[in-house]
Length: 68
Image (tube, rainbow, N blue to C red):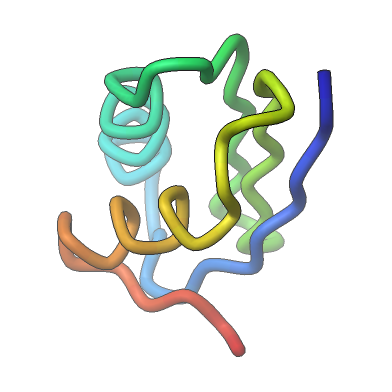
């Protein structure tokens, strides 16, 4: 298992957190997702084979910006 921390811009409420969490949970190998809109942090616990770029692409696909 690995833990990935991603900084996300554009989350402004609990609904945004839920959109991000639900989207990331659709990725095979993602075990747990925590999102906090107040600090813009998303923490993902996943199997080792899940690429960070896959997580970031999914976040951007639903309309949020990943900080580089």
